[in-house]
Length: 488
Picture 1 (cartoon, rainbow, N blue to C red):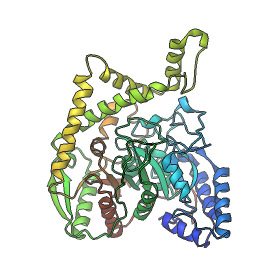
Picture 2: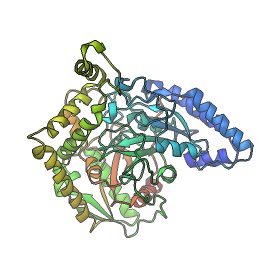
Picture 3: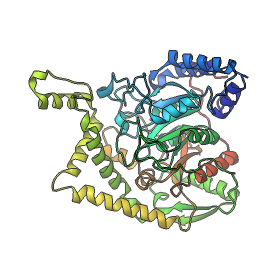
């Protein structure tokens, strides 16, 4: 932990017992946010709103009310998740002035549990990116090394947790957008089973893949946040009628079968990532787990499949941002609807978003649907079948979260293929709707965080949290270096 930084579990305990006030906690969090301003974490930092919410909580405590399990805990929310009365841009000029009238379900549930939203975090526009450089509001910088990316698309949320601004942050994970930045920033990143967390109020990128996720420094904080947010939501038809159990019963890994995915763990990874994987295997064996080989033969088709399915759904979902009802409008109405729509899309959407919309539109077009999108759906099924077979001989699967550590800012902006290939490890669990978690696995020789990923069968989310808790206890946690402020 950073000096003076405490977990969400500890903050809530202290605030509920009046050992410290919610206002004190929020003031400390806001001070850290201001000290980390050079990281460009926030699109909106709601200082006045956060302080007012803290004062209301303190007044309720003084009146003897029993507050929720996250009482006084400051949180950051990715800026593609709706927050009532607070600017929500999705990192795009298209929504640069959009203030939603409602909270997303996950935000509503966090607030009901006593959490305090201090701001909205920067992201790749509409969640499309792996570096947090595709934002209309500028790139986020990695707290470990200002010349490196924090990962994407939830880079602002990951950086906020890594820099000690908040103990908890929300992100969204479509093909790895919580897990990859978690790995790059040295924190935990959890994507639950698809449907565990409601998508109501989340600005859609690819609806069959999008899932809200959580970033934290403590596994107990992850479990607490999940217990508050999980559950059916009548406003989201994809939410599960019964949420999977997320409270882990213990951290004893004796008898646990961990399958190392051979297709993801070989020469395609940097030496630092192979070393991180070896360290994790050693820790698992010390904890009593049995490590076996596992195969996902169709993993080699994962990136291509993901970028066909995701872009096709993005083409459909983003068609509404045309300057008519949604999005900023550009051009005179006298020019006609078609011209206004053309100008609005051209000026309001960034280069990567337009690239993906064009890719998806092509994949869905007449004459190409079966050759591209239809085939991708069939391979997606084969990938899910691979997982089913792998879980016959393994309880969880293990791989690097990313093939390498955080890369330099600007190094891949003009090479989209290299950027897309970085999703090779994370996109598979998204395609199959499986729960997955990125766990810190030490540092590379150049002192950048490494992360490893565990994947479990559907509805076995608690199993992942138990593994993460055991490793946390065995090897400890890493903390970012100072970034220009004494946090004690």
